Amino acid sequence: DTAVSQTPKYLVTQMGNDKSIKCEQNLGHDTMYWYKQDSKKFLKIMFSYNNKELIINETVPNRFSPKSPDKAHLNLHINSLELGDSAVYFCASRRQGAQETQYFGPGTRLLVL
Amino acid sequence: AQSVAQPEDQVNVAEGNPLTVKCTYSVSGNPYLFWYVQYPNRGLQFLLKYITGDNLVKGSYGFEAEFNKSQTSFHLKKPSALVSDSALYFCAVRDSGDYKLSFGAGTTVTVRA
Image (cartoon, rainbow over all chains, first blue to last red; front, side, top):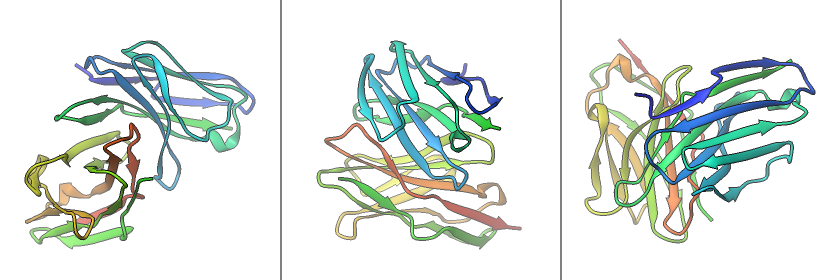
């Protein structure tokens, strides 16, 4: 069973399009995250939701909008895609408490042409 | 504010030799420290963490790390490296009062046969 899953795995699209990436976790965690990994492999946090409430909103263009319909899902919608949005986007969920760990999804590789 | 530094972009070792990947951190509260590994075209996999307790923590695949509060370091070590350990390694820190996990720039480990 996949703990954190993302769809799609690959996404190739034209500039100006709108696209969504979906994330689901079956771990029962309350907190979920979106990260962006650029071509130099730098990992940067974008958003985090805790119990469907936005708790982290880093300096990200407002073309990016997260949505959490329930605790198990955190989707990322991107409007008016730009070349610089090309990256790998990772979803993660966090187990809290003494056993704290973040579990990452396999990533969505976005290429904007 | 929290930050983490991985001073080496690359570490090269021969199979069977000890492997060390360095990490230093800065937090204002108590640090929660993590190591993750990323294989090519894969998501991040959790290796080990320090939250509290013994300064020496053991994790997956024979890796261990030592928390050193005075040197604000959390170096990752493996006594005998394998070719299959070749990957990108990330150190991460979370301040006890924050939801956000900050990642280092990553260190590429190459283990030659």
